[in-house]
Image 1 (spheres, rainbow, N blue to C red):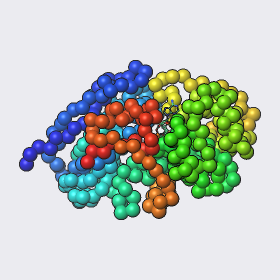
Image 2: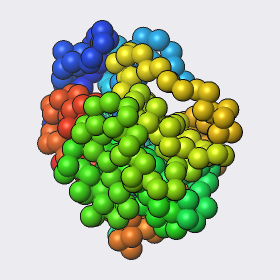
Image 3: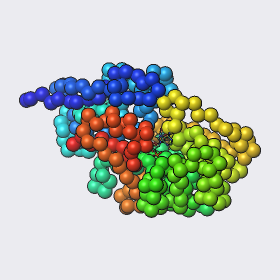
Image 4: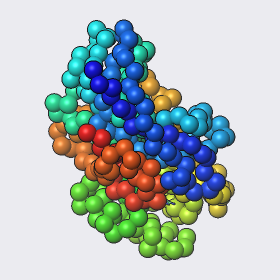
Length: 340
Ligand SMILES: NC(=O)c1ccc[n+]([C@@H]2O[C@H](COP(=O)([O-])OP(=O)(O)OC[C@H]3O[C@@H](n4cnc5c(N)ncnc54)[C@H](OP(=O)(O)O)[C@@H]3O)[C@@H](O)[C@H]2O)c1
């Protein structure tokens, strides 16, 4: 049998400030022979996610750093192409954490390492987006931290993205007013016209705090009761100025500071004045709620109620540039790499 070549992307150096393509290297490795209990998965999609930027740094955050000269970590969706494990058959569709590579040889008996998924009503790629980690992230922050009541106003930044798009749609489904912030007219039009938000503010059109906070006042005439934070910086300051008493903020991400820029908060005294609740969370620390979240999200996608959009880069070699683009907002919806 001829050897199968597995093309991988390794992290070979750590960024100083902005990440660059030179931090990554394309490497070819032979796929070893399968041993008992193992499964060979051919990855069809790689998930690219903002958290990967933090893992490229040396310093330990809430998760360990990505080691150098090893396959970049990341979520994957693919198909079993060989199996010596009784629980997996050739042709099974699976999601896992194979990282940036074409194949994954895995000891499939390890708990949680591979999940079989049903692609009858939900496309495989959606398990990396609205019916996967980003979807559960939106669900968790909205339902467990913001916990909005019908009639309240919920604002979300990076609103056209994988997480933000889910937050606003779930808020609408709960009878809330949903307002997004996104970069550019196209993204804002999509958020309102396709996703059904009540309004979306193009933050790039507002160069200072007064202007952005004025736009939020117009879009949120009854103030803001819940804010889902993906960005930080001036957007957060502007939302603080329009937040109601007893409002809640779910701190999910602060992408405007991922290259190490300081992102101070201008008016922390408003937390006290408005008796606000601010809570950060990491979605992987709440695995007990994933089945409940995935049930709602899977049904909503299968029935067409939850809409989503993908930006798909082609081939393993495109992963580094696609990832760098994601950090600059070049993606429109969930950023994926298609391998097959
Ligand atoms: N806490 C958790 O467990 C958890 C889990 C998953 C994701 N997250 C966080 O959730 C957030 C969204 O992730 P995602 O996967 O859904 O990504 P995404 O929104 O699909 O893509 C990232 C978006 O961030 C926006 N952005 C980038 N730089 C920005 C800047 N300087 N200022 C304002 N906006 C900027 C861009 O949108 P625009 O073009 O609209 O600016 C870009 O498209 C990220 O902060 C991520 O780290 C957290």
